[in-house]
Image: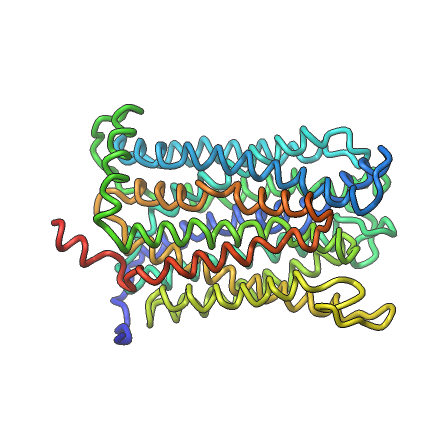
Length: 468
């Protein structure tokens, strides 16, 4: 494959629009970094475990039940997103508007995040916390769908990879900064103090875990502030409305889905990403809870783990975007999946006492060191995988229907979004082991890798020429 030439100069107006588009990644990333993975997810697992143990369960069974409950919340949210995302995408294309939907789902994000404050350490708000987190997650996912659909308008085929990679890098940098702030000034450890030995800011009560629970309002405020550049600088390309109704959207969606068997590359890519993105999202969702339930890490340790992963994510996605722009997204995706399979294999075989059956000395810190390394690799490879997948989707988008294309992309990512959490929950329940519960993710990555065989590196450009 030939190396791409240098891109044409970007006009000041377009450059400002790109920066505004990147602002969304910066604003929204904390929900995934702080909420899903490194602060609230592990906190939820910890208080759920304590509540179940108070009800008479052993620690191991309570751990598995806590992970199963967290997976149930992700499963329900994923099903809702899967069934509604493609319809909303087609509807938005028909209506010629995306900004109103971004505003609506931004409200979901803020409301859901702010409500996490009520997740008390006594476990009295467990179900409410799952619902609130699900509402915020739906908001985060849907705003991402609509902003992703703007990517093809920001550059040509050779530049969208760099733009996508830089956007993810900006997002991860925002996640790192947000995590730093939470660890240094708010999230209390076992001693009731933050990572640098301070009491939680603003007089928050460490006994009531108010410093950790502040992650919800913090994410909501962060989003509100840093979405301002997006709304000021990003102007969507207005399209004339064409049958803006749910019925018309369903008709358009049905026609697009029926055309998929004729577009082999797109069909294979959607099938591939259906599995590998499901595995990746589950890996993100349960990485922090794994550290709590298997390695007995504190919230502070998990926060440091998150910083390591987020820093490598920012660096890797920036570099990956450059490689994507030079070589195309497909080889970047393949390498990332192989790396993630290797990391999953290591995680499944690791306990506090042994590594794949090889006993460790009592009190060994090797599992901690290895899991920090795993976090760095997962962050880097996972970020690159998402960035290049977004770039490859742009190569499959039909002109004039970008939101529909990314609605299908969301469908492929969410149609089985319940599968990873559900398989983890089922395997955890059957084995009563949070560690072995991660085993199904390897299979999902392998299936995704298999379907990539039929994906054209340039997307389905050849198919478009045939069907044009």
